[in-house]
Image (cartoon, rainbow, N blue to C red; front, side, top):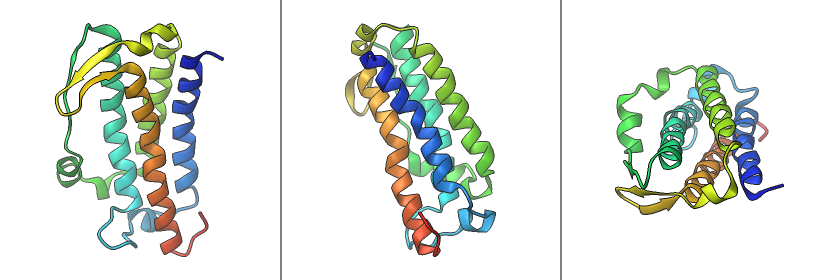
Length: 158
């Protein structure tokens, strides 16, 4: 398996990992904030659904443009302004699944050499397609550990 193919498989696995993490949770449980000062599970999923397309857009820009500018986004401003607690967890999961499926289809057409294509992030500096893909891949597992923490605080199995 090529490096690109392995990265794609890891990226696609995130959507299943996230769906598994929320399986069996009621609307009340996903909206609960059982850990003081932390987002609810729904807020975590909404955050991921908002940022997965942003991360995909950055990768698309790096694929399609020469050294494009990549703009950061403030997760706290998104959470405060975009009604995270009123979202539908299934709709949010579908956004993530479809975004990743579409981008994987695009990535599968590229040679491994495309992983070295570069963009310029306004906060993080130069980033390769590989770095962007790895960062996007790691984003879901980063938040899933907090979802498991919430499940445990609610007395649910992880």
